[in-house]
Amino acid sequence: MSEEIVVVETTSGLMEADILRGLLESMNISVCLSHESAGKIYALGVGRLGRVDLMVPADQADEARRIIADYHAGRFIDNDEPSNE
Image (cartoon, rainbow, N blue to C red):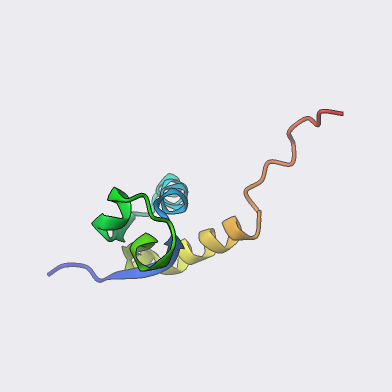
């Protein structure tokens, strides 16, 4: 019996999807991307062909959504970097 997979985020392009996939995988969450092949071939990042779904196992979905929300809220920004002043 296979485990249920759910969509936790839909992005407008492969670049942001790859960033989020890397973030989630660094937190030990399994991630699959689903997108139209034509969007990748033609480098489309908008519309239906540019849409990318991030899918995770259902038992990891809540944690994945929390991490993605933290990412969008800027909570992963390193405020300890020295300023250029």
